[in-house]
Length: 156
Image (cartoon, rainbow, N blue to C red):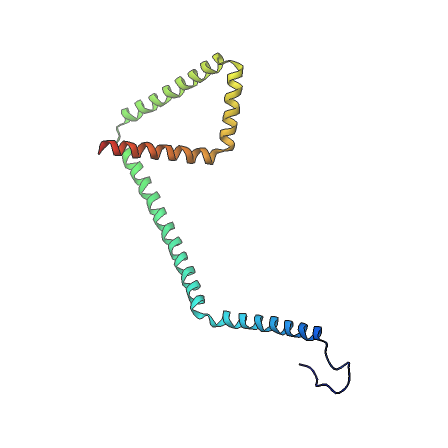
């Protein structure tokens, strides 16, 4: 640490120098202990490796199941199309076209007959709804859940 006192003032460290040396030694010792503890903590390292391995396996399984579900849905869609008679498909297409046309006419009628102030307020509300889409969707989902719970309780 320091050289013994030999009657020479320069060889004897001051109390402040001794404090700094002790502080530096403590910091070095702390870093050394941390590094040694990190290497010695084999269980924690093994647990981290196992967790990473399990996470990877779970992701692979999820991707596999997702692909299987997509494939089954595609097959089911094709089966429904194959088993549905052509006249029914034609009628459904005609009905869809009529609904689109009627909705477009109704929208145009409403747009023409709505006062400008109301239209401006509606546009402002629509803009705010688009900007705050996530909270609105969460609120709508919560509302639907509440309605479903109330409905199921009434049936009991």
